[in-house]
Length: 523
Image (tube, rainbow, N blue to C red; front, side):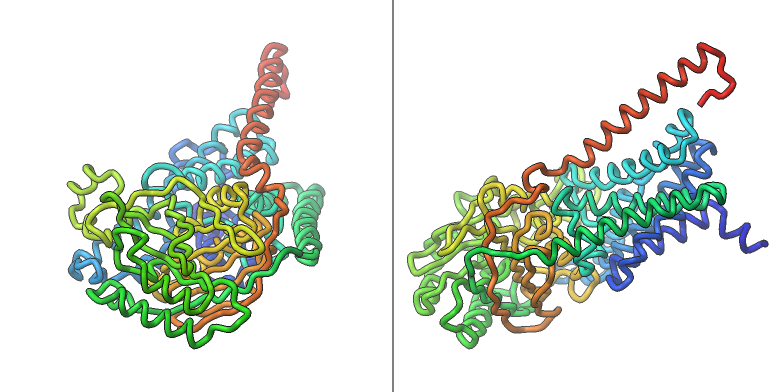
């Protein structure tokens, strides 16, 4: 009896829910846990929604902070930051600031669903209404991580589902938002099932089962549909060049020797495109015309090379994916979404005064400049769109590339900063969702892993593991068909907000009428 009293305390339920919900993002084989792990959170928030406002704030922050601490602990792998010339002591400060600071900021946003539920409780005791408000509040908390110069929308609820291909196909309809909301709806219904009287529990349980089964059924059908289009054989090269070598004085020569050697040793007559990762050309060239040896290599192999290149034009640094042929750079994509502290200093004046050591984190002395175009590249057989590293966590960028005509997606990345941390798998998972959302094959080339070939249904058909040096040669397919998500974008969240607004207005009207008529059954 004492244990039951203890385990049903709101703070205990919230701590338990936060810990369990974070686990699938590190251990993907626990993917089913996400479909039940948020239920204690919903139960605690809805059951105790009539408590004081300060409890709503505290419970939201408690869950959000612990949840993100359990996801972002991979920041610990960044230590030491000797590659940036930062001392061990300062490295500890930076790593802890990143881990706990971002967890606190993103955790504080989880006060939105708890406070919204508290306010909604003043209108209605209806569990479905409170569950929907809480769910949309959670989605709002996730959306807010996508704004400001510190934008970092990394921790998505459904990220741990990326290997359960059949369960994520609904992303082709409403994007990753759709999968997130389905998971939350099932959890909310399970919480309602516990709160309802025994005779009514079956309704909530059946509803949760139907949602899960319908999502699984749709996914199973979709992953078995035919995929057609022109073929392209891509050779992805993973050099696993260490950071200290890549950014050394002769890093450009080291990378070229490693990547050119691996390419020459594994090239076949069937290869149509060679793919090298982000910063495979780490030297900052002043113009595209300087890439003579890469042009020569492409001519020697009679195959175009798509490589990560750093350029400096008119004093502006850009991070690029350049398509190099025997004629030189024939297409060049400049990274649109830059990495805070890695490629530019956000809120430079304020943060440089508070934390002067942060300015040392940029690889180059000056900030990069972001690109403003998706730059679709034309190849024999189809059109290709590029994203670079950090950009894969932003659905809008891949979607825009597809809207602009991309029939195949390519991601070049340098995840060696992440070492062997869980972030390696999490970053790969984002690429899987971009593939499903847009119905496109995605070929991923990473310096030290995880390079992968992902089909248009999100299935990983080949990959090179962390720190494995080698190549992947696979046939992929162009596809011109657009998914519903590609056509409509992220409409689910604003639509849900509109539903809440209408629902709230209806409840207010009923409440006003009830007061006018002195109704004893006032909602």
